[in-house]
Image 1: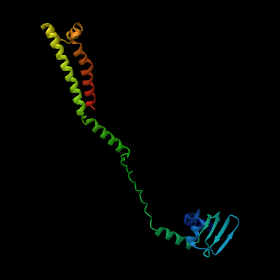
Image 2 (image 1 turned 45 degrees about the horizontal axis):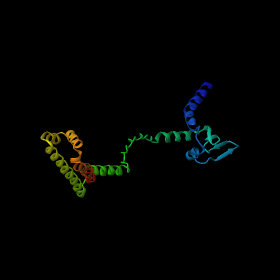
Image 3 (image 1 turned 180 degrees about the vertical axis):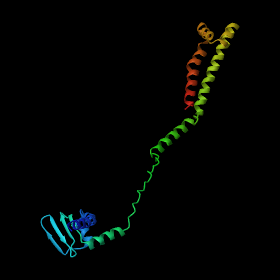
Image 4 (image 1 turned 30 degrees about the vertical axis):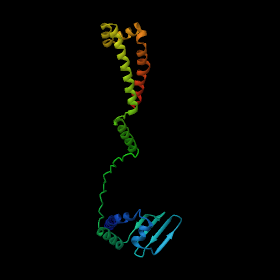
Length: 208
C-alpha cells in the first residue's frame, strides 16, 4: 500500500510540477492579471504569501514569485488556456538599403566658372587699334623712308658702287654716313631722332 501511495504521489507531482514551475519567476502584476486578487494576503518586509479560495498559494520575494502551488482545477484551466493560445508569429526584421546621396554642386563653383568664362572671352577678343596713333606711326615711318631715300641719292652721287652698297647693305649705309657726315648729317639726324621715335611711339599706343 505504501508503494502505491508513493507512486501516486510521484505521478501527481510529475504531472503538476511543470505547471508549478511555470509560475515561478512571475511578477506580482502577472499573477494579478492571470488569477485576480487573492482571498488572503500575508506580508512581511520583503516576503508576501497569497492564497486563493481554491487552494492555490504563491510566495513572493520582492514582488517575484519564488514558490507556487496550484490546485488541480486551477492547473487544468491554466494548461488549457496556454495550449489554446495562438502562437504569435515573429516578424522578420526589414532591412532597408542605405540611401546614397548625390553630391550637390558647390555654390562657390558658379562664380569661379563665370570668372573663367569672362577671362576667356577677354583673351579671345581681338585688341582694337587706335586709329590716330596708327596714323602717327605711319607718319614716322614715312619720315624715315624719305630720309633714307635722301641718303641713297647722296650715295649714288658719289658713285654707283656707294649707291648700290647703301641700298642693299645696311652696314655700308652706316659707313657712308660716317665717311660723308657733312653731306648726309641732316637726313640721318631726321631719320634717327624724328622718324624712328615717332614711328615706335605711334605703333606702341596704336596696339592699345
